[in-house]
Image (cartoon, rainbow, N blue to C red):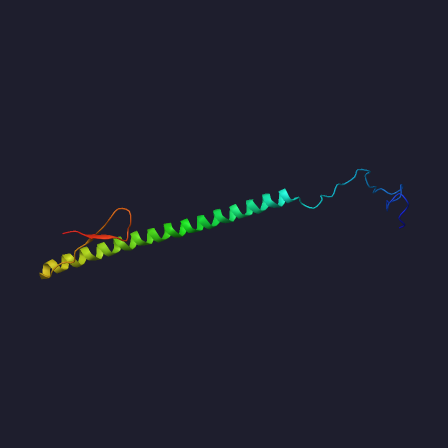
Length: 107
């Protein structure tokens, strides 16, 4: 097929004809557009990191609480057995508000 002077590769007699409408090709992105997407990507990345950190903290807290309850159950079982044997029982710990890793003995 020959390209005619009009620039079209199709002749008038063919079924496939190109429309005369001009297709606009987007130019290079502007600096405002680039800055917008940089900010958007950075904020989304920070949001995802914060969400991951929050989920890790929640998971750690849940593990701490479950372990704490298991330990309290074991202490109660041991204390009951030791009371029968007249051995001094273990003092259980109480969580202090604010920081779960601080403990306070109950007498």
